[in-house]
Image (cartoon, rainbow, N blue to C red; front, side):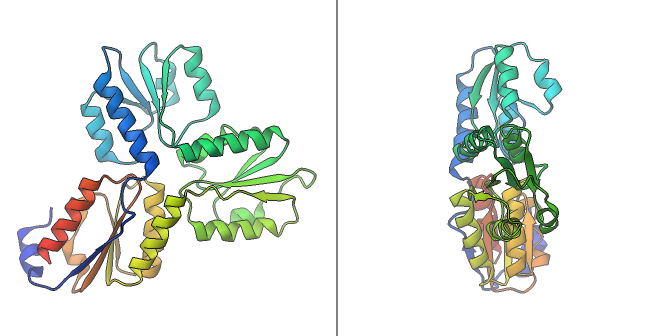
Length: 298
């Protein structure tokens, strides 16, 4: 929480705060979080688990743990289960995870984002048709790891221009390109252009979530108009990281915070306009707390 000294220092300064309309929970995240709370509320004695954090937000995960929900963080922990319900996280998981749970007769509640499930179906279908799969995204992100698990053996992940330039595929086989739903849209276009110049038989499916593109476009627009920009989201949130990159490119005084406690008003300096946006896994109460505090102080 900003100190009283900081508040007094800045109090009285004229401040225009612009909050992005697209900030906060997207459809898939909202659906996943509500699913877990509903399961926890209606659970009998059987334990409720999520395979990995249901979303990338520590505050939400902590609250769910207080409701009795247990986070399984490794496949080994999953293997040790003998009962209960496992909720599949919004990022989705590989096909074999479902098979493991079904074999163990563990109840599954699937909270995978519908847009991610669509990518699973695409890569499964295209791979079965003999195509090589290229996923544009972060290879270490759980969504991308899950997509890989539906794509057969000939699957490649491209994250950077260097990855795209060095990509070598079988020229005798067609290629299907998909994207992580939260990937930077402009970077996606740049990487697709590099891959397309390699003379492979390429079909490109832009699977970036429409809400992600709208969020990024609005964030850039606001960042171009303000003196300072605040981006709110968990440090592990891919879409928040992309928002920060975009905003930082348009406004040098851009700050990435998880909660109000991370906000250092001394960093803002003497500014007249502040923009606020937030990742798709940031609860509305955290956004409002930051927004209200900035308005009161300024």
